[in-house]
Length: 475
Image 1 (cartoon, rainbow, N blue to C red):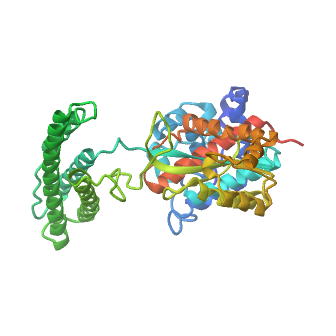
Image 2 (spheres, helix red, strand yellow):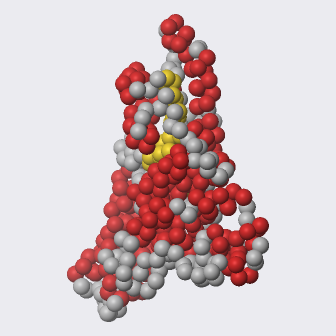
Image 3 (cartoon, one colour):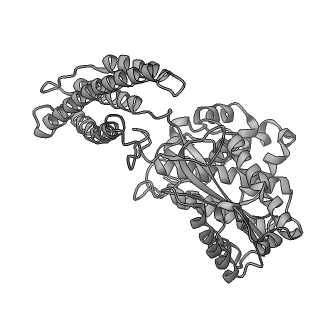
């Protein structure tokens, strides 16, 4: 049954009459902001959709206020779920902040399940509400807007064809062993080929170090020939494991291998997992054949991870990290480094395509276009400048690349243009802060929905800190 909050006296009132002096000033201001009923309502609506009658039936669940505050605390300090549980359980201040006090602290698994119910729509609504609170407190006015993009990496290892094949063999073999353990009637044959694959993958990794341009041509060709042979062997072993998984799934479907009672549900789930994983591994086999054996390095729709298949390879021109593996994220700011909107792009898009939607979103939030709109050269185009002018933006700052005409050079040398460009560089600092402080460097949640949730909670934590720094609301 859904609860909004616990009904009890504060632990500080009982044990520490002067416990408010233990609070960090910033955390105290965030606590006041989260007292807003509209924020709790959005989380309560999301938790109420867990089951058809979650609002009125069942035992009392974790209150929506507790879920919201624990998730905020987790992303405020970039903790894991286990760290969040441990820190809240051991601190009177965090217990009071999360409105738990003398009640039981939700364990990490409970918090994981509840966090998955807080979807992208709920998080967008919370960010929108924080924008409204920031306007009420005169922290932002919507006169300026800056936009930039970054890459939030998924939690995967560096993808190579050989390691992806090894991952497929390992996962299929592990699932087959679990299925054999659950089956009571019939026999599931399992041959473990993981060590055979691992030995060959290790040799591929070692030999790849001598296949560079610095190596002599004769040695390089000999190494490449041996590596192709090793890849063929790894692919043959992988195909054998896939056939083994298909046979096991077919036997479960035909009823020749089954469990007794409730175990049959688990057996059918494992068989479906074999079918799903087998399809993904076939994609890896196809791209390995094209890339390694046929030399087609520009194979379309490359799979970069078995566990995060939505991952994309994105190049942002960084010297330290030329290629990043994750999703492109757009961050949109107003004054005071306050992030007014974010977008996790489902597919890699040019920065220019994100300019017009950002202006439209700003106008939805503030009921007017910004006076100043600025972005880097990746957003620059004549069409984008015209679109911003048509929406009523007084000063559009989109610096163009390459050789400029004399008129354009004079235009970009104006004092207001250069000042706007200096203000735009604050985007880089804000991206650095949310990556280092709130964990947006690498997403630790699973799937596209997990990426949306990770970015959304990081943005919410950033905005709460900005509001806390601004101090109490002005009268």
